[in-house]
Structure formats: structure tokens, C-alpha cells
Image (cartoon, rainbow, N blue to C red; front, side, top):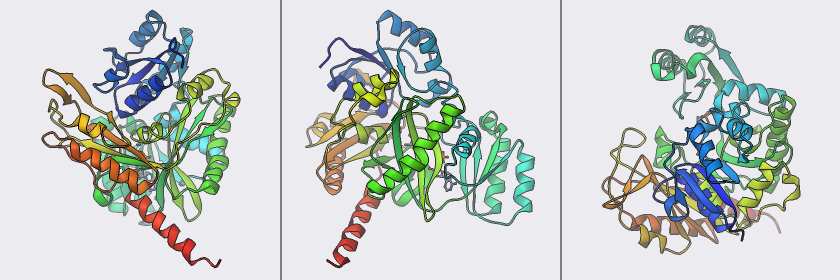
Length: 440
Ligand code: AMP
Ligand code: GLY
């Protein structure tokens, strides 16, 4: 324990609650800006927006914060790490330039090309008209249309055919909300396979690969409905065995980190690969420059060794000196409970009941994603409200415990996906059947 350490976590979601919770367990005194009702229980909330970089620098100085951990992408892309570093403050996360691996899909593709990292083939267009000409001239096939810049998860269109792709280009070209993001348009080959999330902590030279997870991006069961920030996750994902994880590390993560260093944009922080496991092997769909959410909640629940030590060593560029992290045996499952209307507009301020009963379920931690303390108690404050997380010796048990926790919690309009981890359970059954058939 190290009670003298003061750490600032920037952000207000389930990811930041999980990080703050773990850092507090590691013995740090935690400040969270702006935080939520959950983070207030493990640290001190400070009413500053995650994007108020000048305010956060002043806070870190005033309160003598010795490490700042940045959760979301927006402040990273806006240069929070550069500002902290210039002020002589220690910070975990990539510079604005390095965060372009997430902020610009084109920059990401250039790095992948330099590192010879497998990814979907693509073409880049500087105007919707050019993209349209290209689609009309080539054969009709499934493609993915993407806006170059950050578009809060809404700039990607997975299209079955030319007509759908033309519509996507028209949407990007015509909608003012994409004006900045769509100054470049990418048209990619559509990849088929299983999607997994693999994250690594890196100081720009050494990398520590974390256990594989699977997210559930579609709003409804069976991967139906609109894309969301993520409705649930589980860890580890049985699609990625040790051998495949080693291949992902050596063919994807290490060459990406090296390519960034060679391009003079060294990456420090969490490099988060959204990968497709295709018949030709794992390929990169996208890179993010931060922990995934809800992946982070499922990961933190399983992390037995110190997170603080890992983040410290990363910020000091001495990740090669720390022991590899230790993970609790078994599995974890995170189920996101969302407000009515999500991923569209939602009403806020609904009182949440049953949080204590849920936290009393064996193996369950309720991470808050969008909550606030009000006179009525803890109330909803956004679309993804809670990330109910359970750890257990098996994936099946972790799923059962997580949903047992979910059942205790109520507010008007609350909903969640009912099938989080089912693909993993199905895969486990397939693997068991294969093993049973193998000759002794
Ligand atoms: P991105 O924001 O680039 O991760 O894209 C969001 C989602 O779109 C991903 O999680 C995938 O489900 C899907 N996607 C993106 N690129 C491709 C691709 N080349 N082939 C198939 N699906 C894709
Ligand atoms: N769960 C996916 C993300 O954080 O982008």
C-alpha cells in the first residue's frame, strides 16, 4: 500500500470508475474529473470536464497529483498529454499526434502499412463525389464506408452492396455532423469473421499484452439493432488461445508500436486493437488509443496485481522493469444496463433502485457509467448507465452472477442485452466437443 500516492483519473464513465476502483485498491488516493456517483465512493470527484485541459493542469498542480490517467479519446486527441508533459506533470496516455491512431483512420492505415500489419484493403477519397465515382465504376460488392476523423462511433457504415455504400457516402457528404470527420472518406473491403478486442499497455518500446476480450457493439440480442459504444464484454474470449494471442502480439501489436516509433510518433498508453479473426488470420479493423469501455471493466475485475505499478512504469518509460500482470483465474462478464432510448436520446434523472443488493451478489461489482447523486439518491445521467461486472471460476458462472446482479437493479425504462458472453460459451462447447473427439 502506498497512501501518499495521489492519482487523477480523467473521465466519467464505467471505464473510469473501474480504473479509479482498482487504483484505490492499489493504495492510491484517487481524484476523478468529473466522475460519477460511483467514482465518488472510491475517490473524490472534481467538477471539471474531461476536455477542460487547462483546468485539469491547474488542478493537478494545485493538488500535487503525481500521476494522471486519461480515460476517453477526446481529451487525448485534443492534446491533454502534451499539455501535462509541457507542465512537467506525469501522465499516462498518448500525445495528440500518437492518438491519431484512433483520431484519423487514414493515419492508422498509414502506420499499419509501414508496419506491414494485416488490415482490410482500402481506398481513400477527398470528396464524396470521388467516392461515388469509384463505387459506381467497380463491381458491386460488400464494403465498409468510414469517415476519416472521430465521429463518436457513428462514422462507420457496413454495407452489403453498392446501393447501401452510395447511401452511406451521401449521408457522410450531406450531414453537417460529419463535416469535419468526412473531409476524408475511406472505402474498405468488408472482412468476415469473429471480432475481438486485444489491448496492450506500452511505453513506446516494451509492450504488455492484456487478455483478449469480446465486446457486444450492437444494441440488441443476436447482434441486431444499431451500433452502440458497447453493451457488454467478457474476458477472456475463448476464440483467442495463447498461440493466437502470441501471433496477435508479434504480427500486429509489436509492429504497430515499432512503426509509430520509427515514424517519430512514439505511442505511450493503451493501444487497443479492434480485430477481425478472418480465415486469413487476425486483421486490424481499427486501433483505439485508450482502454475500451466496457472492456476495461471486465479487465479490471480480473487484475490481481497492481495497476498503479503498470501505469507508473509506462509513464516513466520503464515498462521493461515490471513483472507481468497477474490475472485472476476464471472469467469476467460485464453487462451494460442502459436507459430507454439509448443509443438515441434518453431521459436522465431516473432514480436507480437495488444497487446495494446487486453489489451483495457473489463476485459482482457494479461500475457506474452515467450516474449522479441527487436528492432522490443515485439517478441515471446518460445512455449507458451501469456496467454490472462479475468474476467467477468459469465463464458460465460469471454470466449467471452478472445477470443475478442485473436483476436486483431497477429504474423505469432500464434494459440490457440478455446474451452477453453467449458467443464465448458456444465456442467453449465447440472446443470441448473437439477435444472429446480427438483420438487419445
Ligand atoms: P470501427 O469504428 O472502425 O471499429 O468500426 C465499427 C465497427 O464496424 C467494427 O466494430 C466492425 O464491427 C465494423 N467494421 C469496421 N470495419 C470493418 C471491415 N473492414 N469489415 C467488416 N466490418 C467492419
Ligand atoms: N468498446 C469499444 C470501445 O471502447 O471503443
